[in-house]
Image 1 (tube, rainbow, N blue to C red):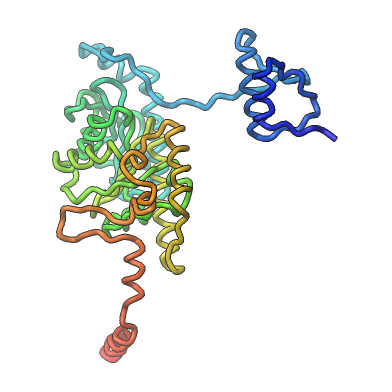
Image 2 (cartoon, rainbow, N blue to C red):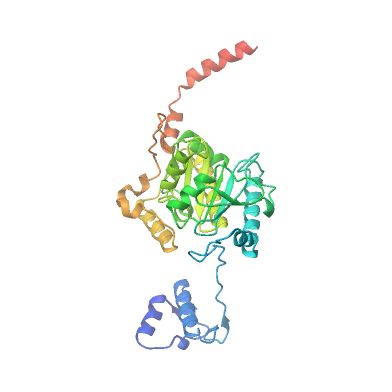
Length: 359
């Protein structure tokens, strides 16, 4: 019977100076042991460019695609001619096509209607591609995309830029990691924003890892400096932000990443909505949330919670939202409790009176 090797056993072998090539070809490995073996073989074969297992079979080490745009600091175009050449260069045209693709996706998902929503991608120290005003996001072409500076001045493009780009720029000025923003009005997440409710923590692992804590911005007129300031400050702590009585804005390292967070946010709010109808959410413990936050940080995503909250407070994050408007937001759990306190006899009496009038 084949021996089962664990990661600890492989580490002991390495510490004792043994070669991992001594492991039999038919040996069984735990998942962590297999990962360790691959890493060791990859580092041992960097000069040859290929990793080979003990059986002689080449081990393929795939690399994740990277859509993040990297520019040379201080390398923004200096003249009008350089700016035009940059705006129509192949790398920038490829990003314009990605923006149009994301536009089709948010439109087909029903996240926007009419000319709603907007998308941005930062492509320089002071340059940002953005969608134009008064256009359906489902039917854009690369020729429709504009370019602005971080002050909101349009520097390229044949169509006028959206006024709401200012909110995106507020995020990018406050959070250098924000290379792209997607704003939309997905039904469930927007319903939470209108109701002044943020979904609780400690419910589903994926949102905790890929979203972190969802932020909440009090209502400010869209496109105004006030909205840009408030959302921009929140972006330092949150990658997904509900804007009260408006919609959702998410940021990421590239436009696909920002869009994924929009999908994650609406799916999470959708699930919480249905859960409230089934008796209310049941949370796991803060110790489990701590593990997820550590995983999120290991993946390179920011999260303030472990630095600012005690472990016993972690699952309270997201249950309530501080808001400067007179209408204080409530938690999902309290909204569910309020619904259960309705006087059913009174509702029936009112319904009967309405039916009598109608008949």
